[in-house]
Length: 390
Image 1 (cartoon, rainbow, N blue to C red):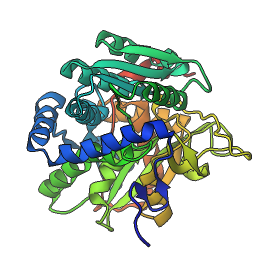
Image 2 (image 1 turned 60 degrees about the vertical axis):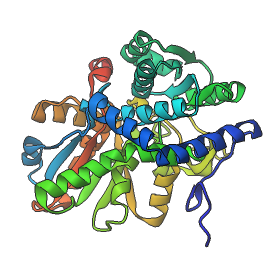
Image 3 (image 1 turned 180 degrees about the horizontal axis):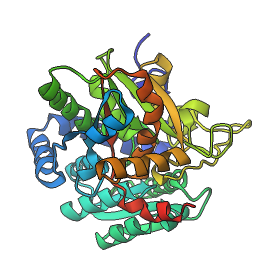
Image 4 (image 1 turned 135 degrees about the horizontal axis):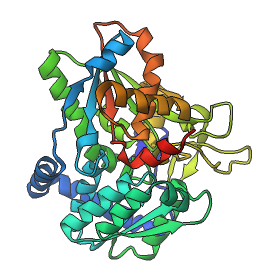
């Protein structure tokens, strides 16, 4: 079967209004040209190294390893990137692309606020006007990041429609882009959306997995056995997984937000409980009701509170390349506290889901094996949420 452009197996595509097709083609052609430009690639490398702080280390979590008394656990320290998460890898790349395309206005969506902060940071660095759409609920539970965005010069627009979370922020950003295509670049934050965004975001985030491969081989003269990452839209996970795609002995495990439990409707476990549909311009698994309407989601972490998932993850699920499980809010809080107490590292609530799920992964592994966990963000943004939990 001929591989369709913009698709990962049956997933992906470009399901958008006709008015956006020229802009998406412009982004696609611009990205292709930028990848061939020595100047663009040198600038990207320069800012990732000297501004973001790459390469980030892989850290052997000895205390956490001893706690589980199983395989060795390593943390990919994306939490120590400038702005506190992996999101800056993508925003530096896409902001440079915006300048390459001679766009002077950037719009973005954000849930937990980390992508919004990273976008505002990159726009301040490169002199671009920045507008960030954020669900009203997320504005309320991520006040620190809202302040950071405004401090960096971004206009933050609270979205009051729908569930007032990430899904609705993306809706508003797409409406804005439709109305302002000539001077505006849409800086999408995860590996979702219409083609070419899933491929584009994956490219900029794959620096995570490329570094892990080189670092782990240098330390251990072999590849890791298991890669673990949280999955909402899925950018940190696909960035870790993709460079190991052809290494069939390296297992991929993605952890979704199981919220109040998979037996309830209070979760965001799209790959486990969703059905195939179309949202925000792409085909993937979605959480839908019996009538095909997109359902509201729940997660203690704003960054995982999304009813869809990147099409490449849907493809990995379909072909069995990756396994996807869910960690509840309670397990995420346990993971948050466990890493803080055992390693002196306070994680964001998003990767806390991956840490919290280790208790189910580790018993099945041998002490001779190794696990890499993508620590995609730091937890200072979530302290208000943790302290409010009773």
